[in-house]
Image (cartoon, rainbow, N blue to C red; front, side, top):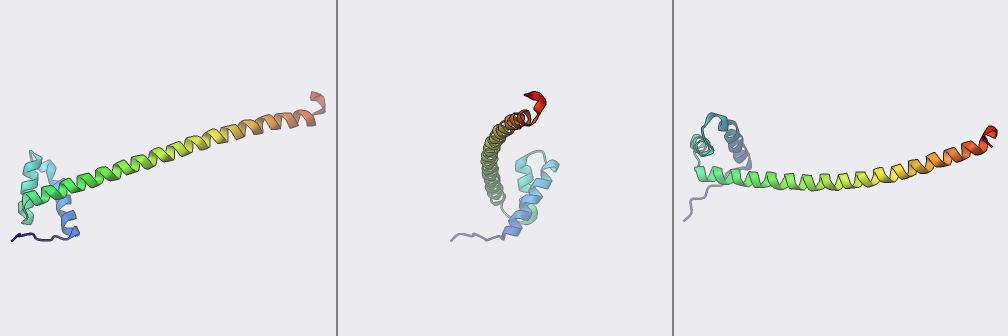
Length: 106
């Protein structure tokens, strides 16, 4: 029979916040995990698993954000190139029509 206890997401989030806050007060990550786990009445391994899962989730979100940023950068660079071409065409056209309208330039 397993002695698994389900903890709420709020409890897990609180435990991870406490771990983050307590890191500066301990000489190692292991001691911080042990201290916070003991104060919350949970197993250090449980807290360690929650931390590892949170780290993986954050890394995945960071990677997704980086991919989205790269796609946005690519789109914006293409848009800038298109706008520069349009600006060049408009500049040439305005010079052409200005020369045709200015009788002194003929």
